[in-house]
Image (tube, rainbow, N blue to C red):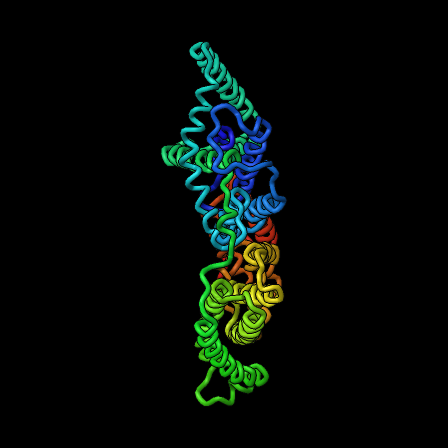
Length: 473
């Protein structure tokens, strides 16, 4: 755990996406793997939170761990900070699922709170483990360690200075590898070391003392009478049906509906309803989850009514999802694509996929797999978005339009967008490349912040951008 935290402190670039994040997570997994080599119940380990007959681990835990690594690895290939931030937040959830598990929404939420709590509980445990490493010859060992460190630093300093003075290329490489030791750098090292040590300690603690969340996985709650849930949801279905009836005419009407409606513009049509429909979709999922928990299902009539009401509500909501995506498609075709529009459209499509899963789950009424599959679908969607290179997609989409391209917005995209600027005319392309080059020059990378997207952008800019000052039309 100590070595893993040291690697994280030395490699994590807190201000950007870069390969250092991948190095840190791999070092952490290696540290946890080494800890698995020792006996499961070493002397001084914490008491197990639950007694199980075997220590068999579910295969889905390893799948969630692989998803966590994949999400953090996005920072090695994509330089878009907003995309990497989403991947980090999602990696926190998948990491909690890998460590604590959980099947239902309640157990998943409880498991997400386990790693922070285990991190603080592991401090004493790790302290006891460190104390056992000190033997009776502690003082002599400390002298030898100090002498070894001093000799190593002296040798590296002397010979490194000689090699650097003998060759300019080696001096340049050494300047990129050697850290810039200053007060802010030391503070950052200490901060990252503490956070990484707590995170790795909590992960090791959960491996040694796994929580039992099976008691939270039951989906059966206190049931209500048939009249109490069927009437409100039946009225809601009628409301949805009325709205969907109107929306079907809009969907089949296409652009003609917008043009023929007095005073209606694309902006008013799309912007005025898209966000409301997104909220409707999210709230519908909450209503469906509540009905599945509290509606009775003991009698065949109850199960049939539950399938009809929830199935109808899900199908109508799918039409609403299609309507909202149709609105966003019209808006993006008219006014261009942005990060927010692309991301929200992806979320709405994920809502639609979850609704399809709800329909499948309705065949057997009970579906304990649904929360995990929905989360896995969201993770795959986010990884697919990263693979598609969203900033490049945005640039290419806006350039393909036969309208004025917002050069200021293109210049504010990440360097991932540079390969997508090929179809822009030379004058305007030089303007955008110049803006992106200035941004990267103000924030140079060291080895921790190396990123494939920025590396490719620098190569293209160095090849295509002339040395003369660029001008923007």
